[in-house]
Every structure is written in structure tokens, then in C-alpha cells.
Length: 511
Ligand SMILES: *Cc1c(COP(=O)(O)O)cnc(C)c1O
Image (cartoon, rainbow, N blue to C red; front, side):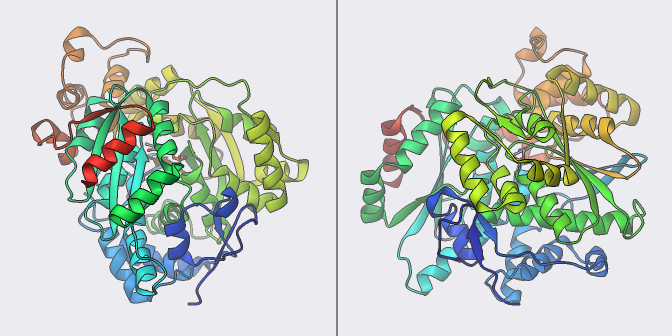
């Protein structure tokens, strides 16, 4: 297979990297995002043939067709590492038909029980391979230090993905008072010799600003290079290495849907995705462009509904928007960074430059009529309120016995509202047990803003999961979560917010 090259969405970077290079670089020169120069296509027969393969092989086939710059055999080896015993279901991304025509694609069988694992179990493996390649070609002497600011889920998934990967180290900063008991314990009990975790005195914004300031501090970058042979990287969700694995599960899911009789070969299925940064649903869009028979792509938002408004009106406007907290925090986003890739595919680099300039200057941009029409050919959107999403969890559990997390509930509700005759694939992005407090509220009829009853509020996050199980008899808790209270807490340090807090934490750890 010929190596495929990448260009950026603003056409400001002339380097045309191959896959592993684009992954190591992360963001393009000039601030654009890497996209493939062209897309491979699959015939229906090629899609359906995936159903007979284990998941790692399906992902390998898709990476090969994408012209990833590694030998096919090596891609296969890396995919076995990415999608194997680290998942608690051998199907990796199984599909459950919950009611007739509504199929839930479960993307949370990985080690951290959330969808980020689908990309972050895979991307670090290729990142590490990419560094090794560059070093062997003499283009690089440094290893990489990944710095992450997290509001919860991404930090843990990144830690688990990078733990003990060659040529990489990772440090995660989380707001000490801003994550749930379970989220904190998931991070501070992380295994691995190349990982570290710090709480930050402050909120998520403080965390993120401090990490950004460290990235932009030239003296700090020089010090890391000279003293430790390290370069900084962020491995965030705009990295193409996180996008490509998310295309794979949509191709794979269509093959599974046909194999199980959920859809007749060649007929369309619609896909409904709980959306934040637009990365997950963009995977579905690319899969559709590559020939997978997907119909409407339903974009589901919570009360931070800037995307639902954009898809309805063609105007993206955050100039007067306030950030709302919701029971689906991984979708609490104002700037959906991966949207830039869709805009590029629909309208080209020149428009993207205009719109992104307008977004940073005025907090808004409006697409032209032709782009709006093209977007509406594929996408419709809607949003769900905080209390509605808890109501959905209770209703679906009562009616079907299927327990879902608040992110999935947002997608379920939007799918029910917008579905037509096509079968719908509702994308489930977290195990319910990651958000046990809100699931408990849902099952006991409380509203989102209600406090937990006193006897529940004094329980640890894990103990509260036991209370949910008393209410929902068939609900299982993943082993890694159930064992959290007993696990050793390796990382207890809390540091000051600000650049110095973050940099000194890194210095202290590197020694
Ligand atoms: C990250 C995340 C999302 C949002 O995915 P995007 O790719 O950012 O749109 C939804 N649900 C959960 C549980 C997540 O962790």
C-alpha cells in the first residue's frame, strides 16, 4: 500500500508528513489540523468481510488502507497490543439492540471504561513507534513528554495509554477539587514507571492555562531538551492519531450490524453520537465518505448546545455563551476543535482560515449557503437538558433493563426524537459506573441540581456504585472501578496553579 500523505486544514504547512510523523507532530504549522490528502474507499463486500475478523485485524485493515507508513505486519502487531486483553469484551466494541431498531454501540470496554480508550489505547502505540522511527532515521534525538490538563476522563485514558510506552513520559494535571472521587482515584492509582499525576489548586481552567503557559515557555522547553532529552507534546483530541481509530469502529460496526441481521447489506443506518469536540462523530462522517452505508449523522449535545445551534442555523456563535455544568461533563465544550476538519472537507482551506480568524476575533462565524446545504446533507442535531438526560436513564432502565450513563442518555434521547425508518446506532461513550452519582440520582427520581441524600453523600464513589446496584439488580461494575478504594494511591501531591506550579512539579518529578 502506498504511503498516504497529510496536509493541514489551513494549507499553511507544506511538510506533507506521513501518518507516524503527523501523529508525533500533533498540530500543523500555522495552527491547522492534519487531514489525509485523499480518502481510501471500501466496497460493500470489503466492509462486510470485516465481520469475520477479530477487532484488532479490522483496525489493521483500515490502517493499511489509509496508507499508514509501516509494514502491514507491524501494523498488525501494534493493533494486537491496542485491542486485546486490555478490553473486557473480546468483541472490543460490541453492539446491543436495546429496543427494535435502536442499537447501542458500546465503546467503553477498555481499561478506563470510557470511549477515549478506543483511541488512546491505540494512538500512544503508534506515537511511540513514530518516535522510534524518527530516531532511527537520525531526525530526532529526544523522547517526548506528554503534558495533559484534564477535567477527568481524558487524563486517565491518556495515562493508561502511555503507561510504559517506549520513548514517552506523561504528566497529568487535574483540578484537585474539580473531579469526582472515582475519577481522582482512577488517576492517582495509575501504574507505570513513566507516569506522574498532580492535583492543582484551582479549577479546570486554571489547570489548562498553567499547562498551556508551560508549553509556551521557551526557557522551560530548552531546559527539558538540554537536561532531560525531552520535547513536549499534548496528544490531544485534534491529533490525527486519535481520529483514525475512531473511523475504524464505524466501519466495523456496519459489518457487525449486517452480520447480526440488524440491517440488510447495503441499506443505510443512522448514527447518533453524544458530541463535545466533534471527534467521535467526525469518524462516522469519514466512514460514510469512504463508502460505509451510513445515513444521517445525528449530533447530540447537552445544555452546552453550540453545535446543535450551528447545525440548525449555520452560525457558530460563542460570543455570548456561558459555560454550563452538566451530568455529561465530557461534552461540556464551547470550542469544538475537530469541527475545523469537517469545515475543511466541505468548504476548503481558504474558508477555514476566514472562519477560524472570525471565531478568534469575534467569537462567531457564519458559513455560506452552499456549505450549509452540504452539511445538512449529512448532519442533523439536537440537544437535551440536564434533567431530561437523567430522566432518560431512569425511563430506559425501567422499560428495557438497560442502564446507561448520562452521555449515552443524551444520544439516546436525540435518536428517539429524530429517528425515521432507518435503524439507528446510538453511540455509548461511557460505562454507567463512571458517573455513578448522577445515575443514582436518576434512578431515585432526583433532579440534577438536587443534592444527594445524606446517607448517600457520605459514601465513597465506589460504595455509591453498590447503592446503584441495589436499585438496578443486573448492573455490573467493571473490576478496575470496583477495586479502586483498595488500590494504592501513588500520586498524592497537590501543586499551586500557574506556570511555576506546573513547571516545578515536572522538574521535581524528572529529578
Ligand atoms: C470525550 C467524550 C465525549 C465527546 O466526544 P468528542 O469526540 O469530543 O465529541 C462524549 N462522551 C464521553 C464519555 C467522552 O469521554
